[in-house]
Image (cartoon, rainbow, N blue to C red):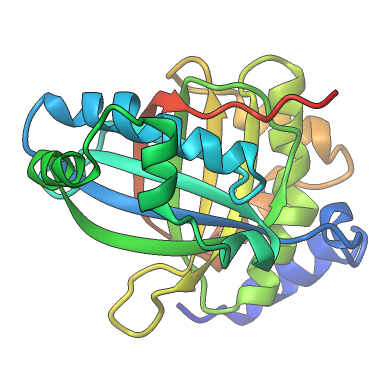
Length: 260
């Protein structure tokens, strides 16, 4: 999708009023990476396998500093013929991303009474892992505990301008929705791998919420950007194509390690 001359003028007029760099990009914090794995379950045992066998292992990795978090989501609104569950693992920086999980030894340590090979057989029988994607966080609002995640996959042919639009214009509106209790978090992510002409999206935004339903986005846009024209701000949405949106329900997650 190529911007018209009119859209380019709108982009310039709207973005010029905002800081050149989003606050979350201005510090030296390690990048947040997210591995999203598409799972197709073969039956109800799959949730048991993830929560009773693998969640304790993921929690041990979080406690050891080799992972930032792990979660299991079920697709509640979306195409379930391909993926009906997703696992989402986050990593703070390249060191965590490349840390060896040593699953075999760790599994035996965390679940000493469970046979590792038998557990792997049960795992493979309970689900098929159809794809794995690596994402990197570009920007986000404050984030709280949530029950649902709305995953919006996007394609933008002008990455820099698209990222500026999300950070400088729409992020503030999402924060207003959070402050008013409509949502509990928002973020925009760049797809790191896989990439190429066969992949129909290169970005994603994620809306975190505890209730499913419409939100007053237009009102939030005006509250966050009182000196901007609403129609001009919505014109910026032409900077990306929304390829697919799904709603996922949180099934299980690790907890942050306790600090003394």
